[in-house]
Length: 124
Image (tube, rainbow, N blue to C red; front, side):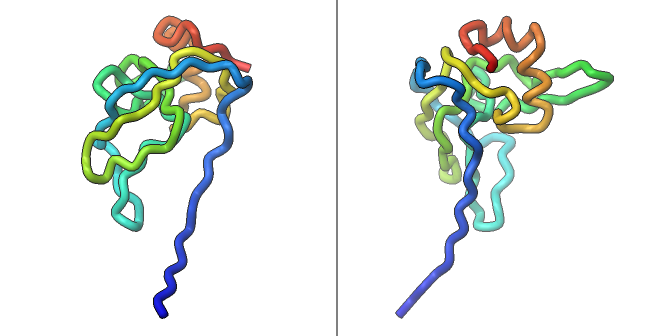
């Protein structure tokens, strides 16, 4: 008999309320590092740009700079190991900024630039 142990990681729920609006888009694996199993994942709660890439945020002296303007938040975790995949992008709703995925994203979410890029995303 063959048995294999698989470890699953969970991410915290980033939704603050049931109301949300999502649109479909295409996510790409550009810039994503494979995990120890060789899989590339876009984690739920990640900011996504118009090209389907994960937005990274850098911080310098309290200023947050995104790699690109986000157009939505990944609603579900998506496996992009084999290339581009369909993704559900949240464009309207209430989120908990501290639970969004990525370094410095919570700080960026509190900025005016975030509110301009995603005006229908409200923070709780």
